[in-house]
Length: 343
Ligand SMILES: NC(=O)c1ccc[n+]([C@@H]2O[C@H](COP(=O)([O-])OP(=O)(O)OC[C@H]3O[C@@H](n4cnc5c(N)ncnc54)[C@H](O)[C@@H]3O)[C@@H](O)[C@H]2O)c1
Image (cartoon, rainbow, N blue to C red; front, side, top):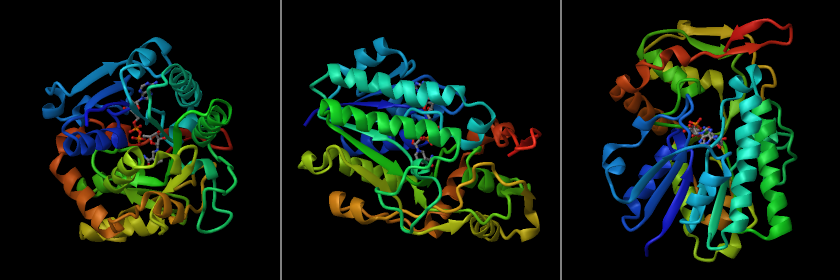
């Protein structure tokens, strides 16, 4: 069956992985990508065989522009809204773009959805960051929303904005809350990509605080599979107006990840460099996997060990992709004492 899928932010990490996954799996589908190519968007993330295909159109523009959003939304039947400013540390330094893109951009997407009743399914990509630190483990979708950074605050605003639209207008939306993703083509500002590329270049791996913060790490391809299931579930009423966590149920500390990566490179733990903790740090994330399994029949397949091997292989084979952005690995942040620290 032919469908046209609108993907926002698909020149970024998760969106481009999802585009590749879907493009190969659904040869009948056409893909419209809207991306304004911020520092995190990279046209090289979209392979030439996709760029050259008549099943693909790239539209350079912002999700905050209602005209361009409407012109694309009216041609689509499925939408996945990835576009966002996505890096916690950058939001500590300067958060203006975060509220503009993540909140107001989502408002524009929702208003356009209201005008386009042919849209069958709209997936909003939220984040586990909206929960803040785990009060209870595992964290279900009922966990309170206590965002702890401006990024998380902006995403929580977008998440609840989407919720308000389904309460008020009964729009066909599902909110997905992914936990921490890693894998090919992730920007070096993100922890695993930063650790892996530092290990490749035999440079120090910088750890926030004592590295005790724990995250639930999901390999990006597993996440893509979950999104595919949500877009194609036979009976959409099962997931319409639902929030679904996408995580593994396993938490690992940052220091354990760093040590796993060092050992895969046969490097010693002397390569660890400890810096101040991140203000607004989330101490622990641990996803409940029950709802995603019950509703989507989905469970993460890739173990952290296997996912790290695949990630290391990708960064090893794609040095040209990342060497030119190595200088962006660290981000300045203002600490509580009003000093600037590189994180
Ligand atoms: N990476 C993770 O671990 C993670 C975890 C949970 C949720 N998420 C969410 O998943 C989504 C994708 O994350 P990612 O890691 O791929 O992000 P990313 O930063 O790698 O990519 C974001 C993409 O959005 C584009 N973009 C930014 N502002 C835009 C605008 N105004 N208009 C159009 N395009 C714009 C950028 O150019 C880029 O291509 C985001 O909504 C993020 O909040 C990410």
